Image (cartoon, rainbow, N blue to C red; front, side):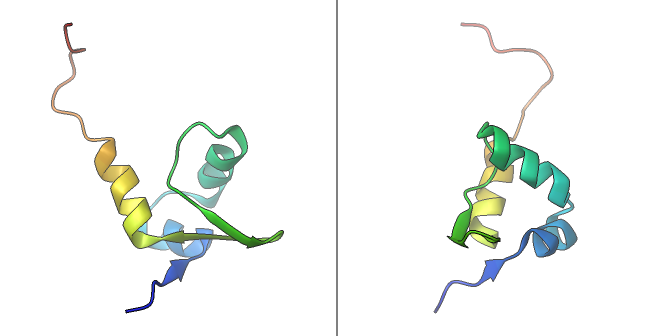
Length: 67
């Protein structure tokens, strides 16, 4: 099955993460879902990468973990 790719607009529509926020994450390089840039003006994501990024941010409680 071929991988389907999502534009930032489609990510916003499906996951509620704004295109502006995705752009900031790409610019700063401080996290965010893995992204692809096949041409200078085209940015793409996979639903699996966005889902994995969201799931990696899961929290169990509000207290910091003790070491």
